[in-house]
Image (cartoon, rainbow, N blue to C red; front, side, top):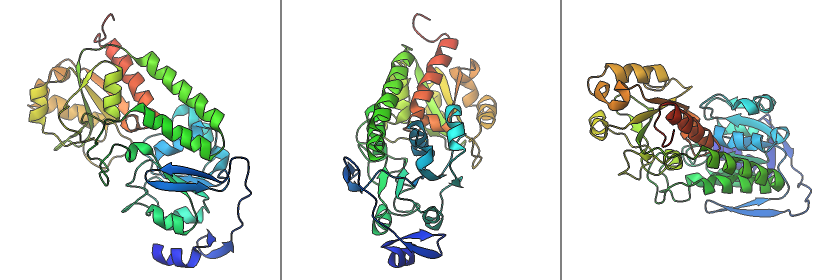
Length: 335
């Protein structure tokens, strides 16, 4: 189906995915056309986008934080409720799908720009490969956090270098430049940097970050967003002997590590056992192996949203929540 759309519509914009209207070239403004190098692609922007579609929540929240709701025509792939401060703006943007939308649904919105946080959404096996959008004349942007320092094609897999907040700030700068709101981008980055500085504490503890799944739990490896959170609060992220972002680790291995506290993701989705917080805690306190963990016996639980453990502005939210709870638990030096 996608191939047929590409052939029929390569020089057009789809209207209702049924009738076709010929496009006119956007009117250039100062600094445009603009070329941004992104994840091995040259993204050519003729004019600041006016009809953007964001395919992942993380990307959506950056665009909304930049005050761009009036230039967005669709969002998709939601894992958690919108940040409260963005709820009003988000309500003005159509939601194409709670999950991954079809290519047709995206094209129905007549986008002039498409952004995503993960190659699993914008790439092979996702909504469409970037090349498909290129053929339709729709520029795309993928978060650098999902390509820079990461093994290609490894959605939840290995990184060749630890993730840093610099990649999140680079994403904000790129998107602000593309939409010609660079001042807003620098203001947002400054706010995030200040919050990260304010959240920094010294907690000489081991933390294990549990995302989901009970039988073969996904726990954070050394080098993704949880690694940023752990290092900012002065803690150690265990297990730290794998560069995989979310390896599946046995409970026996976690028992051997015996972390001081557990960071538990309370996911809005309900796909598998272990998505919801209550199922996590019920399992931890009833399973013979996990019930003996120090963190479980002491009920040292730190609750975050699933999105807080993704590379995004939510990484800052996650850092603040972890730092705050560590203080409550008396695990911060000088507390």
